[in-house]
Image (tube, rainbow, N blue to C red; front, side, top):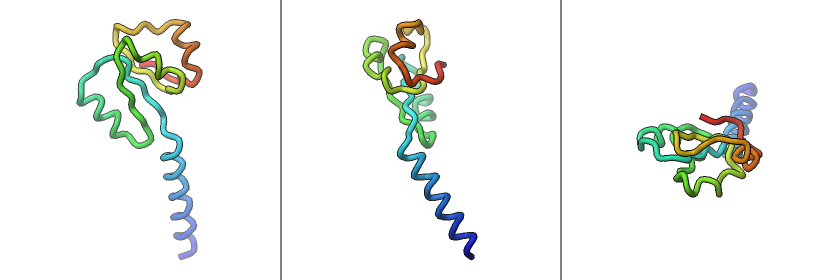
Length: 88
C-alpha cells in the first residue's frame, strides 16, 4: 500500500513536468491538416503553424522546425533559433 502511494506521487510529478515544459514545434510551411493533427495530439508538444513569410517571429523559442522546400535552412536561420534541436 505504501509503495503504491509513492509511485502515484512520482507519476503525478512526471505529468506535471511534461505539462510545464512543452516542446514548441514550428511548422514553417503548409502541410496536410492530418499531419498537423497528429503532431498536436502528441503529449508535451505545442505545435505552431506559420507560413514561409512569417515563421521567423517564432524561431527564438522553437525547439523543432518542420520545413518543406520554400524555407531554406541556413546559418542565419540557425543563429536566430538558439533552442532549436531538430529540423525535419
